[in-house]
Length: 124
Image 1 (cartoon, rainbow, N blue to C red):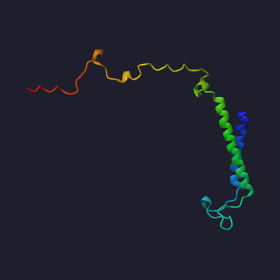
Image 2: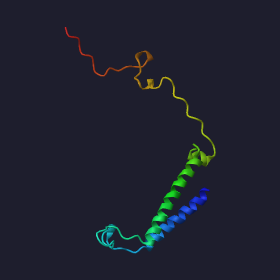
Image 3: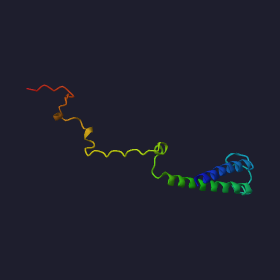
Image 4: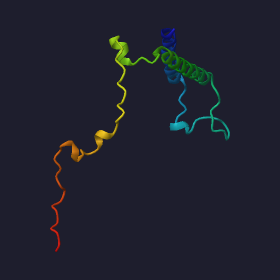
């Protein structure tokens, strides 16, 4: 099913490219100039314009269909698992003393502590 939708999608893409290239150039960039007649800023709907809009709508529909099909086929399997064909072991559960290893060592650990500044002499 996915291959059929993909082939239709590619044919629609080629159709859109062809229909855009076959349309009459109206001159001017970004829709400036060219004929809508009167005060209207839009050109009259031509047959090629309608074909292009129809192809674009069908292209968007096939894009959505391919996205839905790909999401259904994934089923929570990662890309590397699909390539290698083996499932990895689940990640180990975090230990209950999470975060205590970030603390500086205490003096009862036998660690050597170095003072940050020399001790000030006692005043008499």
